[in-house]
Length: 198
Image (cartoon, rainbow, N blue to C red; front, side, top):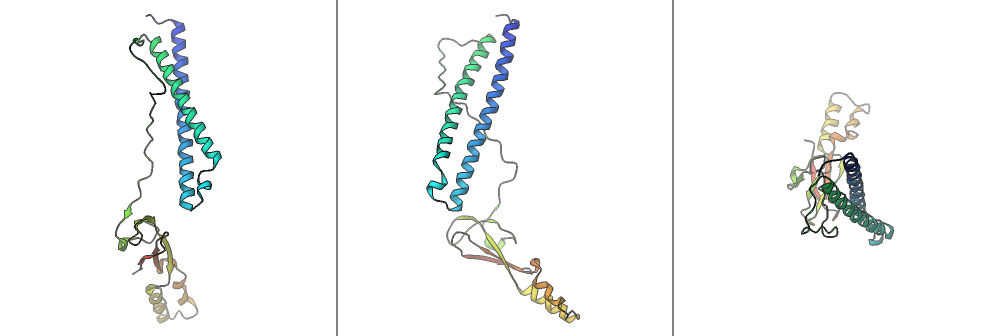
């Protein structure tokens, strides 16, 4: 079958439509991903089951799913038309059913590395970290707080010995890098570890 200018124009139109459909599917999948992240955030924040997934979001989930099915059907129809125009028409034994033949998209990997889970609580750094709580057995991000420790007292004492008695010796109590860091579990509120400065 020779390619005519009308066929070429129709092929160009189909390719543009396929690109639009692909972009629209990606946007809908991103919207679904955002709704899932919002639901997970609400669950982690401790909202009630109705607040976790309100009825209007359930309706939006359903509408997006329907739109994705329609886009899959349109994409399959356009691909069949494209192949027919290119001369690679379908044989009569092949049956393409849009309801059974779904288009699968693969998400891109995240741009940031996966969080490192520290299993030994004695290796926890001075900032909130991912770990496994030895008390409740949950994977958590630790809560941190600071308290005045031995290092602040030693620096205060040393500054007193070098004649900093006009209040300058109290400065170490205000410097957070000289304080000890306490790690707590946000779920069971257990004290996990104290990271000292020394």
